[in-house]
Length: 398
Image (cartoon, rainbow, N blue to C red; front, side):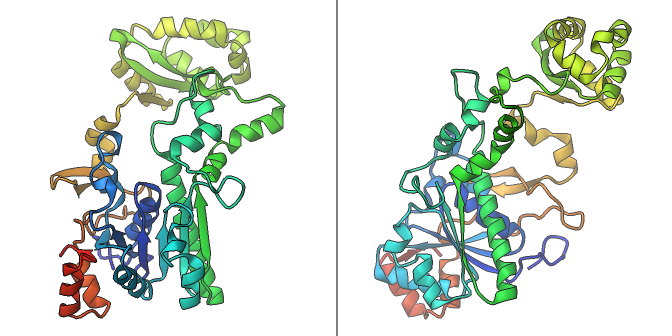
């Protein structure tokens, strides 16, 4: 299996059967699929619920299910389990993110499948790793609240979830990393293993820097809106016509460049602002002066000066505006993707390159059951068997 340039992808030849939905499990499969694995998505007869979500979930399916095949299968029927087991017999990896106990009830848990194939790698995506919390129902927002991230994102007294599904996405990524490690381990030992990834533990990993800040200083970390910045100039500025822009000068060299660029010779010479730490301690009176001085500039004018002088800056961008971002479009960071209604949009690719190329889209997000018949044939079912399974509503799709 190759990318669009003809280069063989690193996980070509690896087969993944995924029993996943929503974001966490599908992210794991998407990453492996982007890197060349054949990922077969097992969906209920009526499809993954993310095909029908509204609002903030409307983009889930096309975002996290590219480069996959779909088979529609009723796992509540013995014949459906039989199909699943036949597919699994050909797999290197099984990935799932259902509630604890669900796969065991179906006989598709790691303990059961390991007896059939000791080389199988089994990736479970859960709310919590095994322990006192593992019976709880978890969501990204739940673990953000209990794991310190919502506290750090919001203002004091106003915990606020991060503006994207950070734990679902990163939890899926860590599941994929675990699968990659297990594949490498299998090369050495000949044995597969179970990989477990969890939302809560992922969230704790994200806030580890704030835990260690307390360990190092003895002082609890303040939420981001209230924190004492590590840098003298590191803020959002409201400028001409109410526009906003993020500007930074995080070293003494950058401070000198900043002051010279904006005619702030007196501040550059002020001994109270000599070092970054001096400027951090002087923010109460320094920042109002800087805000006043820059207020008459437009965001575009400030961007031009900062870019010319190699200083950090950023426009305040809304997600939908990224479709027109010149850098993303020039570098191939966005690729055409089929939406749930059949229309076409663009979707961000993986944020890394292999040999100078971004892993691309070989297969569009599948239609429900798009590959059912082909996969059943490959698994050894006859045309009569396939027709019977469809008549019995064990399978659906083409």
